[in-house]
Length: 175
Ligand SMILES: [Zn+2]
Image 1 (spheres, rainbow, N blue to C red):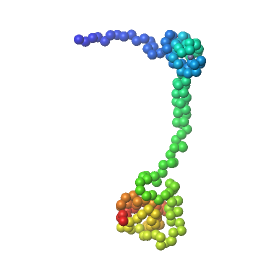
Image 2: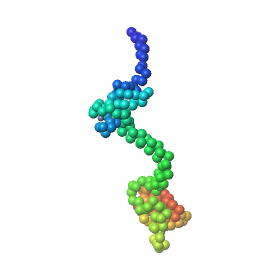
Image 3: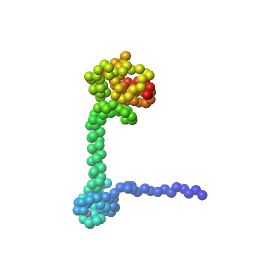
């Protein structure tokens, strides 16, 4: 059996406040958000309410919680337009993974390279060769890239070597 959908007349403002209804308001006497009964409205604006807790009648005030929410919204909107410059800049390429031994550096490969190379005698450098095994801190001399220092052992086949112009992933053979 099919019932015809009954026609239901919706009240004009199903959820809106109405005189005699209840609403959350900040009570000026209790100093907190409480349930109030609406006693006067102008249009859709609630004007006078009676606190259901202390019974005092006063002007309607938005609950403090709601005010707080509005303030946050405004603050968020403001900060959106201001930020964006302070973010960025902190994440550099040098912090891929912290696994394994790493040459200590302050996020500046060039400075790290200089510190490692400075004052080292020529004899401290080994010439780079693919078949060599390297360890962190080893000084190497590359025919093309010049002097370098092993910054990281990536795995048994790759090391990261800092050269004057930056870090390079080079092949090696784990010893
Ligand atoms: Zn009250």
